Length: 159
Image (tube, rainbow, N blue to C red; front, side, top):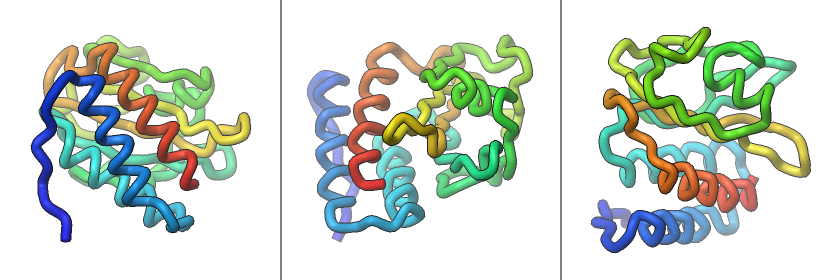
């Protein structure tokens, strides 16, 4: 039923196609875990040069591991700690070119060199984060940031 798609065109155009695919994939489904699982799988198929992609869900003032693709990960992250916790505290996307230069970085996978974290904000409240790691320094560009923020906005329509 599903096959790997080769994306073409500009990066912005590829992300637009990805967001449209996500919308079609999630339409009619309201289960949080099912939708986050499919979103992480879709990103894992689309993105190159990554070693982890997934979600942390905010529960009782800490982030708890949600659906993901990659090696086993840290289960709980306090708000304000690491890149994910800092993204929650600031309510902003954080792009880290070199995780070894980020104060308080939590190293779940020693191979990770760069990271992007996008908060999931629904009706003004943070419900979690999208976290993506790469084994390459400076992997995530401004185009990636914009495209992934667009992807998250599409995802939030289904959560």
